[in-house]
Image (cartoon, rainbow, N blue to C red; front, side, top):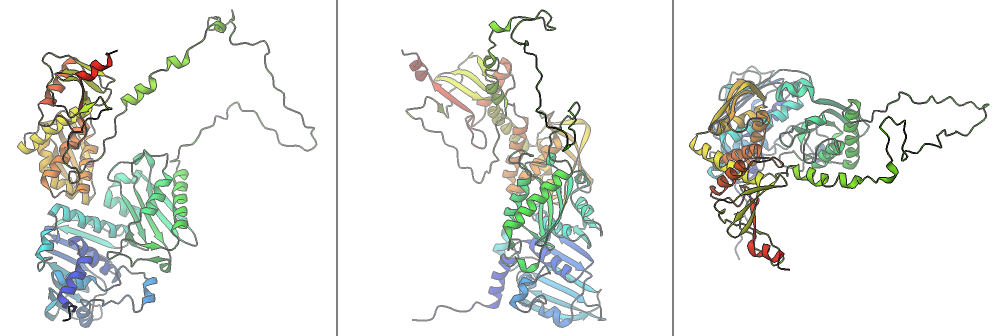
Amino acid sequence: MSDIIHLLPDSVANQIAAGEVIQRPASVIKELVENAIDAEAREIHVLVTDAGKTCIQVIDDGKGMSETDARLSFERHATSKIREAADLFALRTMGFRGEALASIAAVAEVELKTRPANEELGTRLVIAGSKVESQEAVSCPKGSNFSVKNLFFNIPARRKFLKANSTELSNILTEFERIALVHPDVVFYLYSNDTELFNLPVMPLRQRILSVFGKKLNQQLLSVEVDTTMIKISGFVAKPETARKKGAHQYFFVNGRYMRHPYFHKAVMDAYEQLIPAGEQISYFIYFEVEPANIDVNIHPTKTEIKFENEQAIWQILSAAVKESLGKFNAVPSIDFDTEGMPDIPAFEQSRPIELPKVHYNADFNPFKSSSSSSYGGGDYSRKSVEWEGLYAGLEKASKMNEPIEEEPFDLRETSPVTEPSSTATSSLYTGTTSAVEKGAQHFQFKGRFILTSVKSGLMLIDQHRAHIRVLFDRYMSQIRQKQGVSQGVLFPEIIQLPASEAAVLESLSDDLSAVGFDLSPLGGGSYAINGIPSGIEGLNPVELVRNMVHTAMEKGNDVKEEVQTILALTLARAAAIVYGQVLSPDEMSSLVDNLFACSTPNYTPDGRTVLATIKEEEVEKLFSK
């Protein structure tokens, strides 16, 4: 039998390794900027062209490298950070495995210019696909200048799966923000296609957060500070009233490194229990300082997942610290006791004899007997029984009826084609009916939620909120496709402030937003003026509406045009639809029913919820058969 196991060529092995470390342009920037910080750089410039697909350039003023170090740095597992396995548990640097530069050089064309401070000339090195093409001495500033061009040029399949420029730029900005937030002592610049997106000088941590996410955040942040022998925790959490369903800024950092940690996230949210509505999120920026020996950062290729030795104890410390911060700044509701008129409690005197307290009351007083001197007009209440339960009957049902039903977020990629539910012998309700409304039929509103109308097969119930969503969704989709949205100007333009990562997504949505009726003009620095809104959504908060659409597009991925348009249309339809409890006139009900049956699929909302149901005539007759 011939041998079938063989060693992979270095070029193939490097490309496989690169797949774990370099997933997209943002991964390149993360690795290069972290290397610059490890090299003690005080000023870092990041320049990207076409969201990093064409070129990524990272320039720093750090230590630089000698000719030998420059050449050796592109070899796999070549590092200056560790020398033995024990060093993995004493790490205070960002990188350590020696895979970043080797992985980048395996899938791109790389040019490096570098010079240490004690050398007069630097080194220029050109590598493409792990092959050294040239090396020469050059005159260059102290530090390192990396230029990465044509990412994945030798792996077309990987390059094909890169997202749209707006998506890749958003990912770049997200990685950049994570690094900038933890190094306020470093100057950062970021340029996209020669346009400056970030200019961050050295500043205190709080100011760095505000520079990245906007000054409006300043009024929302509460400081957190706790120092124990196990861990030091500092940072900021937001006030409970700023909770939102989407777009909360949530960051954990440990020893200067960004991390994801669902377990600690639950600790923060536990402190907000009963303070914010269920399902909403809060912003936080939490920084941990812990002995390197007590954590393991080498459990994930991108080093964003970190294992702690005493996670349960840290959970308790973190939750208590956040609760203390909320209480210290009066963010937790408290009972305000009225002390006016309270009796004075005398100090205890040992020589004074102890007396039992006495209760004073009027033995002749009876509230159920009439009194001629009563200031309320008297009356014999002893013979009358007040039916208190009857007075409040129905109020609970009415309050629940008027509460809007929470709409679940939808995902077109996960929603299967909607099929009509089959009927059962025990149910008299049949859904999925498309029976035409009888000519001249009257419509009745039931419980402020349903419209009842007569159809050929029986009695139809229509959910007014969902029916309006169906009608508005089709209308908005038509406007987007035909670019015929009607814009309603606002008297006073609203200003929306977005972080750079969200502003990049908004730019990609601008055409679709304009097509539906939004009129936005950029003001610079991530600020936009909302000068006009789609006709028919007056009274809604346009700032929150635009922000929600941006966040939804970021969650779903905004590189599929049709899906983005659907997200925009459904978000608008949900916001502008008739609410539960809204009283409709006969003409309004008739118009809504007519518009519903003019839709191509009136039975279901765009995300598959039932809009109407029919009770067949035979079922109604059975109710009166006896």
